[in-house]
View 1 (spheres, protein in one colour):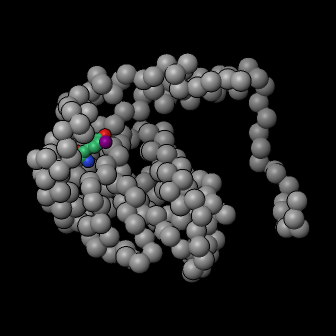
View 2: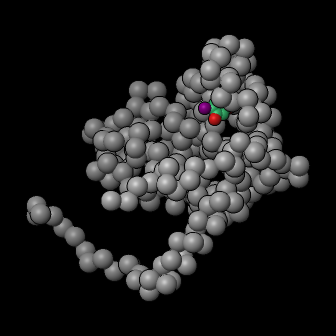
Length: 225
Ligand code: IYR
């Protein structure tokens, strides 16, 4: 290994195999209770919870540890309204044909349409941006590596952190998402909007599409050699 500075791994916890299996099973059970929700209550969620979940997301591994992400957490009614208006405008043309027949057919079992009231009702929207350039220090302007992969992993961490905290989420990708750059006041040259996460409590009458409960069998999604 090349010469580099390091510290001993001091926070690894070794569990018995029995305890490991129990922990893996508990995590699976918890993960199975995560659902994408499209009907949110307007019950407030303290900023500290969202900030702590973002801190968890920001522990994700990334190319050369450059952490090529920025999370904009939006609670302002004003900003949420702007995002809803812009997203609904785009979704209208998407659902009126821009998506194409095959895509619209694929979405039918989810019951989605161009109405996105949750963009205003939910207490928090988290706009995630990926950064082409950066580095381990915020002011660095070096090349970032595996940006898409890195931000995808961080987004997964964020979704799990929010779920683990007791909130529900929706991953939302209005197409194109460039309107988020202006609304969130982010740097156009270096950043691209990656995804919008809606987070909050579910509405009392929230539902889960049956289609979303169909999960592929372990033998389909994995092979052991
Ligand atoms: N962005 C649209 C359409 C949409 C696309 C996919 I792929 C989904 O899994 C769900 C929705 C919308 O939010 O309605």
